[in-house]
Image 1 (cartoon, rainbow, N blue to C red):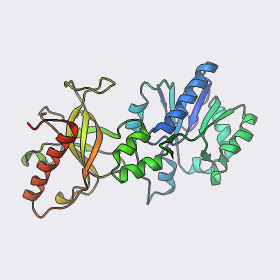
Image 2: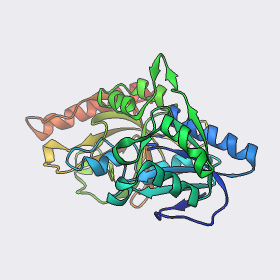
Image 3: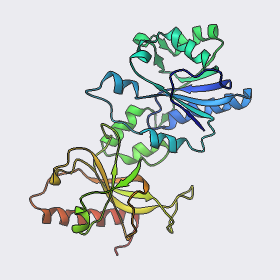
Image 4: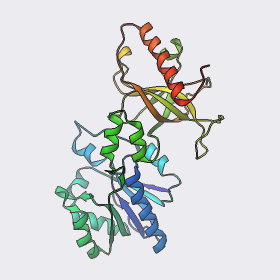
Length: 315
């Protein structure tokens, strides 16, 4: 799978492009990508996902950006094995914002896009003029076919990134899982910390979340992918049960969001390892305590509750 990050890409193999923000790669996004792959296979073309980095709302609302469901590393991992031939991350900046709908279609034409797959609520161009209907009426002038994918519904709800964010913010991980088609997860490399957790009897893997705003905070029962252990998920990836904190760490004066995962009955060196943390259930919100001893007592209760939820015996 080829990654393209330049603004213009000409002279490439003719392709079908699914276009959208694709933050979270939920079931609605998956429907767009599947439709694009189907068109590409039928026409003997390459299949491409065209998205934007940063997301348009991150650029347009820099003081109040939306909570990011997936960073680039996470999206790339989720797309591995997707059958896509390339991912085009169009830089969204003042130049992209100034494009008219016609200029956007001309850009796609120059990039050898022959069919575009878009959602019913797609919108691009100055003032959002290039909506789904607009594209359908004008794309033929640029030699481009348009396929509009209708809303994907789960339990009567239209799947969207906003709905996933709302579920995560409310701590409703089961609802988020239904919308995503998988457990919500974050991915990152373990970095060195202050080793306070080890001193308190709860060594943690510290993972930078690499986003300005996280979609959920609190204490969670988790499963972590890393290394060769006995339990594996349906795809064969190793999973380690644990308990994790995601937030600002008010008891130690944290200044930015950090994901800290304590893995049960596991004592290997994780520094430099890349972990994926699956959020299974929310235990509680972050809060301050009257003393470190009170915090440690609560950590023990959190760990016991996480073990119960995950079906892991006390060590």
